Image (tube, rainbow, N blue to C red):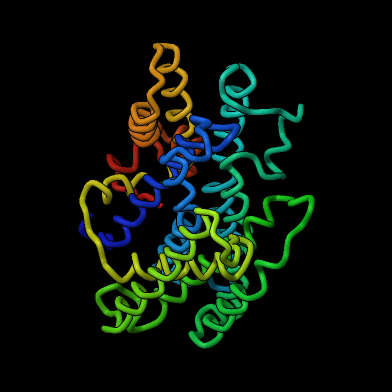
Length: 347
């Protein structure tokens, strides 16, 4: 733990909590299926511009903590991304799809194809596809030198915020729309980490926090007025207004440099939580409803706990054997036991 930035790990834990909470609460057809005026739905809707942007920003920031990709890194770089992203997509996605097809209470419709999810957006697995496309972009930027030149990097980041929200494809192959939506936040994480004076929360200029807090307050009021049905300009995740809200929210959380050990612990399992949390949230909801438990708060708290704890348990189990840590966690194969026992670092 001491070798990691605990402030970033805290935010990773927070991102996990927000993501799992969203999938517990759901919408009109998934999760608890609460009415629009329920306070849990309001809570979930209030965080719509923070969840995935924060997750992606942290992915970019953590990536930038390592050596930039070089021209000769093509094969190892993408071999690692295929192993880390696409192999778990295939293995966990197939198990998830099997469960959905054979459990009648998971709130899902099927298109009849077993492998379509590998090429098109499928529930929360779309993020793995989008992140793979984002890594293609960052590889090109780093190899060309633009990703290592602060001026070019910030220019590309600004252009991404201005242009990409307006580009969408009807078919959405390999979740390219998700990649366009999230790429600006990934680049923002990379740019902050690679800019001296901004590369750590403690090194930020003094004006950063009050400016971010003021901007966030304006965005919060704007968003709450929109949720309340007031006649205000519409916020959208696919427009500059929504991306501005996401960016200032991230800037504020980054600036306060919050550290909390429980979230640090959760953040260490963030990838497994992303992969497996739906098994815990849906399973807990189905079990409790069969036990005649229908109180939304109870279902929410238990679902949230299950969505966090089950993936942590699964990672601990899968990490014990080389083949399971490879197939289900996307980690490097380790002969004869887990990375913790053999001294191999987690990726």
